[in-house]
Length: 180
Image (cartoon, rainbow, N blue to C red):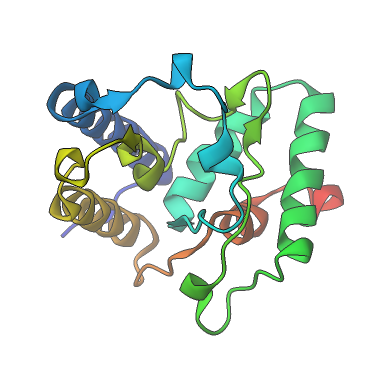
């Protein structure tokens, strides 16, 4: 396949995520509890025993670009939280990164997911509070979505995808050195 530019890949990624979110919303979320009426908003995103989202470089760039649209002050807070998350939960790109969990540094109380519209990772899109296990979207749907993201990432960067914990991936693509 012919390689594509990062800009074009980000456009394709956004469309893929929008389509995926629509598929989850239309097919499954009607069976889930609404985030709007949640008694503990953000508990699932901030549960350091639960969160273990891994993303590709392309997804990290999309998140970085979404963060770049926020105020300088908010960006500094976010990047400080990213670094604090990496330190607190001893996250790295080495070893079994899937065995470590953490609280998501992109969730802000009173606001919610700071990259919801432009950079939300696929596992987060698929997640909702389902009371019955049989109401959950099948694992295959997320696996299919992540395979498409992986393929797009490889077309863009011309090498195999390295799935990393979200905070590590964002840190790697952050251009502004003072936040590293």
